[in-house]
Image 1 (cartoon, rainbow, N blue to C red):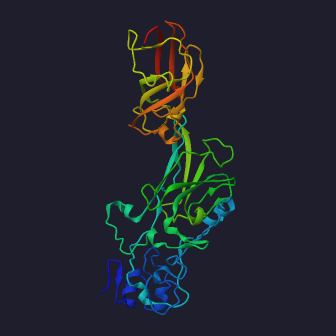
Image 2: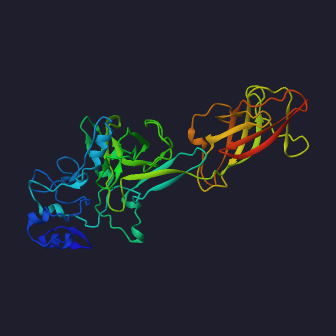
Length: 417
C-alpha cells in the first residue's frame, strides 16, 4: 500500500518512511531513530525484545507506548517533587528503541497524530471574578476528538488515546493509568521557578491537591471544578496569584501522579488571580414561610393590606424558615448563595442562615449554593432572626449579598392566621 497523507501501511519500505517523516535517508537505523517521528502515533518504532513486530508491540516493554512517563508514588506531592517533575524536559518524550530496529514498526504510522490529552489553557494569566464569596474555577482537558483545529478535519487514525495507556501500578496491577482521574496541584507563585513547558512557574510554599470524583473517561471526568482554595494551603490572600498544575492521579488508592503533556498552545499550568468585581445580587422572591417544621410546616403568603407586608401569627419567637425562588439574572458570573446573610432591620442583627431541604432536613450539598448565570433555584433557609410577640408588631427583614440588598420584606403579627 505504501504511504499517503501522512500515513504508512504495509508493506513498508524505506521510501515510505523517508517521505512521510521528512527524513533524508534510506538507512533503517536513521529512520527508526529519527527525531522527526510523531510520538503520538500508536504505531512507531519502540523498544521490544523481538526482531519481529508482535501483537501490541507498540506498547513497548514497559507499557508506556514508547514514551517516557514520570510518576511519583504514595501522594508525595511535595514542592520539590512538582518542580523537578515539570522541569524534566523528557517527560512524555519519545524513547527510541535501543535494541531491535524494525522498519515494520511503521506499519500503521500516522504523522498527523496529536497528544491524547491536552489542557485548554494557552498560558496567559486568567483573572477570575470574586463575587460576594464566590471562589470557584474549572480546569479542563481535551481528548483528540474534542479538538477543533480551526475547522480543519483531524486525521486521528491510530492516534494514541488514554485507553491505550494500560500502564499498571506496580504496587497493584489491577489499577492502570487509563483509569486515572484529572487532578490539579494548587501552589503559590513566589520563586524557585519551573523552567520547562511554562517559564516562570514558581512557588516555594506548601501545596494542595484537588482530584476529580469521576474518571477521565467517565462523564464529567475531563473537567475539575475547584470550589475550595484554602484547605491544605497556608494562610494567604484570595487575590494572591495561584498556579493550578494539572496531572492524572491513578493507581491503588490514587497514589500515583502523572503530568499532562504540553506544547506551545496547550500548557499544563493555569495561572489564575481572583479579582474583586462589583457584586450583582440575585433576585429573591419569597414563596412560603414556616415557624416550626414539625408543628406547622410551610405556610402560604398572606398579605396584610398591601403587597409589602406579610401576616404571621403573634407570639412567634423561635426559629424561622423562609423558602425563596432565587434567580441569577443580573450577573454574567456564577453566584455563590452561601454568601447570603439575613438582617433584622429593627435590631441590626445579622445572621448566616443554614441551607435546608424542603422537608426541613439539613442539606450537606455545597453545590446547592452555586447559581449559574440565568439559572434559578428554590432554596430554603433556616434562620434565628426575629420575633413578633404582640398583634401589630412589625419587623423588616433583608437578605444581603455582599454589600448589596437582594431582598426586603416586612412581617406583621396578627391575632389570627
